Length: 204
Image 1: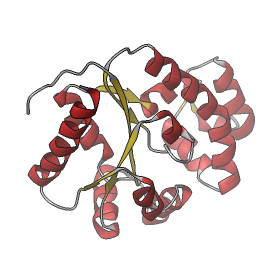
Image 2: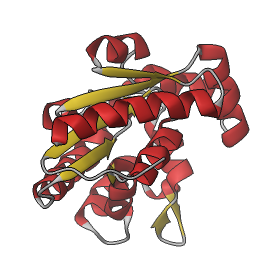
Image 3: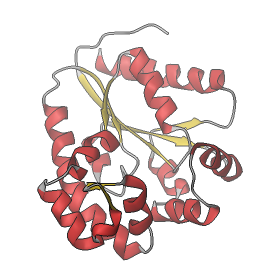
Image 4: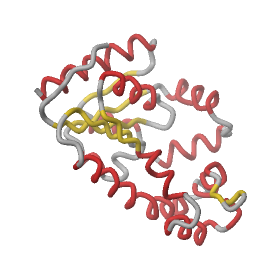
């Protein structure tokens, strides 16, 4: 896969369902020359000890999510996904800060293809910051199988996380491009290269 240059700036929103293979697609796009803005990595700094967001999170979820004074992501995740209200509260603390970071990073780039790797792209309204949106889809059975292999979550916990997001069917309807990740890695690569070539022609 060859890197290709561009003269204009194209912002591609990348999303999917929980465990559908978005990270794999992001990595392949990076290898083609895309600049990746990873929302999960950006969110991590807002969990750091003694930040304002850290203090807000502790005030909502209590000290049970801490280990040696640090927020433990798994404990926070389990606490947040206990109810829709809990996840809404966590998102209301972190999302505004991450959205500001993402917009600053987009503005700092003058040309090329920027990929917004955002699990909650539509939920956070960040599709508005993208020129095009690509959604990674996977059949439910394969989705569950992949999540079980990669995480320590129970099926109940997995389903809570899936239900906390907008349905994959909605995201597919709203997307400009859809990557079917049910086949081999080679088939996924072919789809990514085809989308990349279209983006390159738009940015030429």
